[in-house]
Length: 260
Image (cartoon, rainbow, N blue to C red):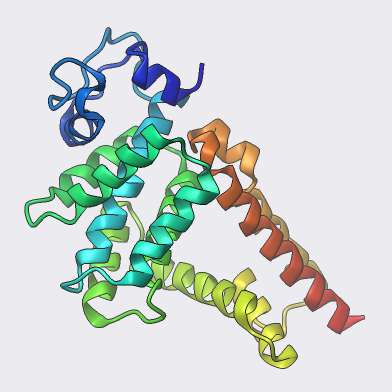
């Protein structure tokens, strides 16, 4: 049974508690008696168990997408469209969509405990750096949904990254790669697409072949769907990771073709 099946079946077998337990419990509504309380089951699935981390990732992602969308004062149609796109890519069933929407709305509230939520997410995702990076990439994409990143959103994203253990330099590098991916996907000019390909891989155009291949392999390893699922990415989100690896491979092939 998947993590979701165990949640709605009442057999997940862990005591999550904390702000994430309260968020998921409230968002589940009437699936459990007293569904507006923190999920507290039999405690047998402890910290670090894959299915527990998957439920934590799902809960944190949709709640923070709401928080980011509201961070500049209002939620745009583009940001809502992005959330809908993520739901479609995840092929969520009606129950899951309802819970994801409830989490998104919870994140928009003025009293949303963002630092407490991130602290618990970081603790639950202990030593899963690639998983945390995937989470950040989804959150950053929410901020970029309207085609720009204003100063308020920038500050909020930097604070989130800091809470998760990223330095300003590391987060700037991540932003550069994500910006490169967006430009690579949407750019029609062959010259600009090549520049974006280098940005996506996080390298300069003057790197040698060995450095190019190393950057490519590193990015592919970080976003490999099966490896991310093993670390706690919900199975429903594999399409997001798969599309990322497809873009990485396409960027690598484009660079290689221009060097041959």
